[in-house]
Amino acid sequence: MDLNLQPLAPACVVSGDHFSEGERVASFLVRHLQTGEIVRYDMKEAAAAAFVPAGPVACRWVKLYKERGAEENSARTMKLTAENLFITLADPATDPSPDNVRLVQFLSLMLERKKVLRPKGLNHDRTKNVYERAKTKELFEVPLADFTPEFFQLVQVQLSVLTGEPKKTPGAPVAGPTTVGTEAPVV
Image (cartoon, rainbow, N blue to C red; front, side, top):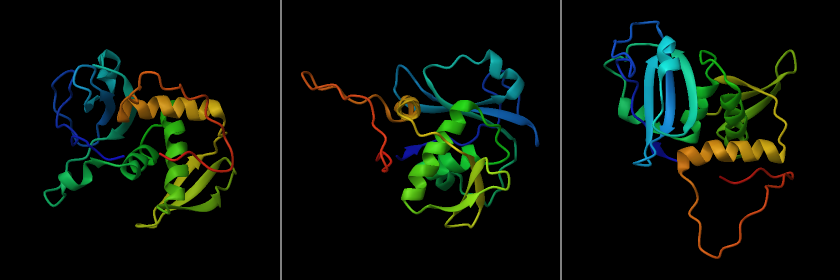
């Protein structure tokens, strides 16, 4: 899954006020209903309650605003891949929501299979899996998941916002519910 993602906006989409260093910024990934594009909306956390998305929300996160340095390559870092989405949502500075936790759990499973993340066992209180990012040796803690069919159905709904609804062929049979075995679904 590769999508182009806009860089962090310099100002709140709701109020128009510029962000200041260290301010909490809420970001939403939304599939625009009319264009079908994935659009990132950034706003002051306090203004998030007044935000009306132009389509279904794939996920949201809150981070502290940090000015981008002149040496940073924003075009390179703005390609939305499964790995970048995982890094953004699993960052300890990001406030987790139940939807984001589910997406992080799924992405960690997928990235472990692709050898991007290496499992390192459980954390000290045995409530989270610890993963090491192969490239940077950075550690991430991901809450334990119960990979039920309902879990995968909810993840599929979230991912369909990012990737678009699957095209339905007239007369084609409708797929049944996902079954869970020892293998994870291929995305």
